[in-house]
Image (cartoon, rainbow, N blue to C red; front, top):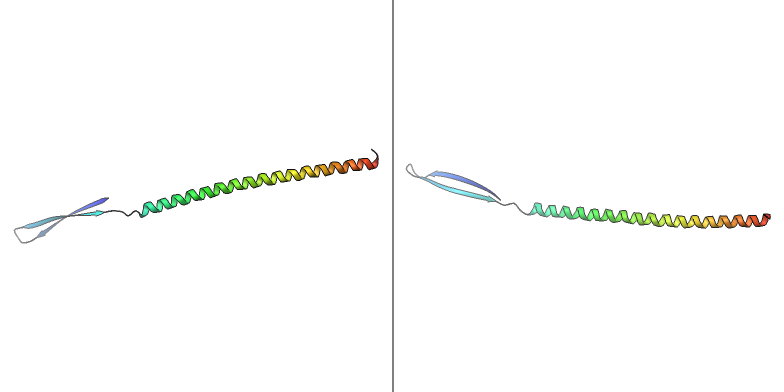
Length: 92
């Protein structure tokens, strides 16, 4: 809270001087605090979103890696079976 004090002298006539003091109080509104809280909430929500997006990307990457490994294992088995079949027909 900011206070400002003003002293004003008003001559009523030549013999007497009337003096009065005016105190002006200024109070700031709560708008800045509300804006600050709103910005803080937005930052927290944004960070939470980005963190979860990163976690979901990691889960997807792991799932794709596992699927690719399964395909590789299947291809290896097919290749081995084809090799055994070829060995069986050539008489080795």
